[in-house]
Image 1 (cartoon, rainbow, N blue to C red):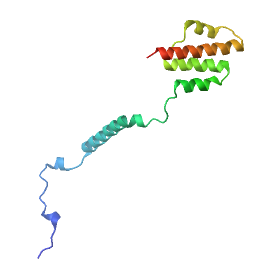
Image 2 (image 1 turned 90 degrees about the vertical axis):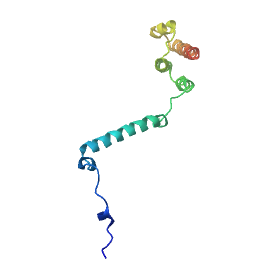
Image 3 (image 1 turned 90 degrees about the horizontal axis):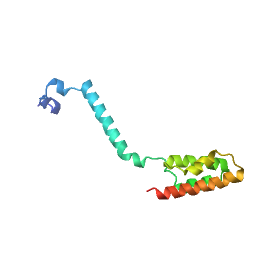
Image 4 (image 1 turned 60 degrees about the horizontal axis):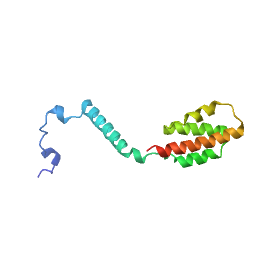
Length: 123
């Protein structure tokens, strides 16, 4: 009796030899599909991959409140630019006028109040 050899008993592949083999076009297609799947997975998972969330307006203003008047004004103007807000014209003109330290502190307070008002008015 002859030993059982299941591999020998299998029928030969019915596909043409070009389809049965693995060549560079198949490898390139698999690589492309893998990259496409990775991109799709990344797009779906991107909202959960953020490292830190943006600070709220109140937190940013609170952090600037402790700074000196000059630094506070610069920070408030940068914050306004990042939020897409434009301070009133009289405040923008006052930023370039020479002023004492106490006037700069008052200007920073007015600028902060204007930013809060503009932020509330904007939907």
